[in-house]
Length: 244
Image (cartoon, rainbow, N blue to C red):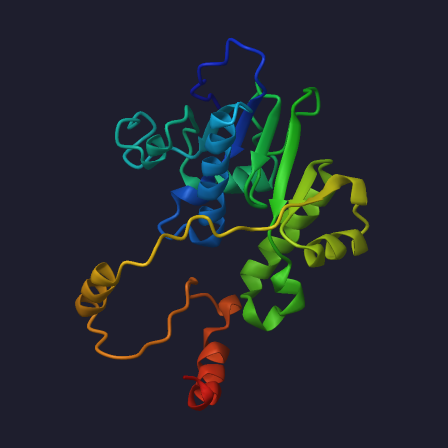
């Protein structure tokens, strides 16, 4: 396996590789929003004088590995390191540790528990973000296949020696109860800076196009069992009479 190597920094800035495979998905979901927000935050830090040399890492671009000009990841203005493998095969190779993280970086940060392991003979630091353990706390909201994959990827993260970023004290407690050393865990709460000011003109146009003529309930989630949309609808049905 060969990788398309990025241009390295000439200065002393840390070289960081961010695995953003979630941004390759048709529906990037919350983790995709997390990745976009992280990149925006890094850009803001650079404006404030705290700059790092960031490269994005993902599977081959739509249309083939050499389709750089049309790669959606190019819009972030960062060098992009591409695998020759499509997304599903790349993730499977990571799961079975058939492929490791590319060399030449100080830190490899994976924005989800789908991550490349670091090489045993290298000095690259690995960071993995663990967003939740919902499949354990609410197994009825996850598919059997999904729960099995999440459990295996979590175990791999726990035993990898990677530093772990979590989004809440609850997730941190879950990991500690699993035997993870607290020194490996850093809590970084999620944010909402990706929200834009309201625009009623565009809102009305969108609702008209979607043929939504009156009141509606909006949930900003994917349609997966673990999102428990059925329970949301039932709760809304009970609470609606008391709402303004």
